[in-house]
Length: 161
Figure 1 (cartoon, rainbow, N blue to C red):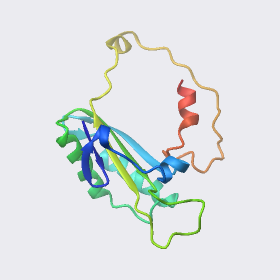
Figure 2: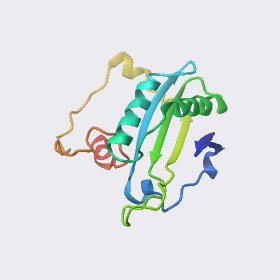
Figure 3: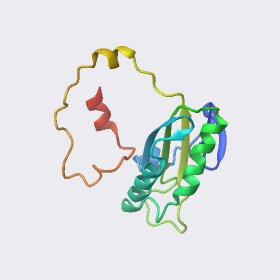
Figure 4: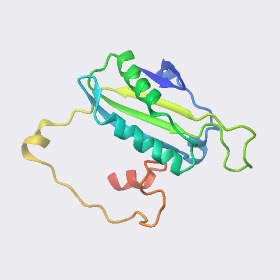
């Protein structure tokens, strides 16, 4: 499978992001995970609008054009020959350093889109149901980032485990 990385399709195993990328250094980034069925991403526009609103609200970018992102998502699925897919779009602040003053020129964000076959669940889940657990409230309700799908996801993943 290939991934879309900053405007190019590259082999997943050969895709690289700098260790200086703000997503890697400081978890400064956002993501959307989307489902596609019969070649169409479910609520693609809504996913991308949410991403753009979060990117602007958090100061990741001044503005984010969603039409080219939608086209890149579709191209990634088509390039990989997927009609049904799990699509993850990740946007980071690129080479921006949060430890130095404002850069002379705005940093270029890093954009990665990966389309993979969808997750297949055990049919028994749908026939017999599943047992669920309501996790304890470990999240901070006053966290201003709580409503955004940021890369700082460790707390939520810990609860899922």
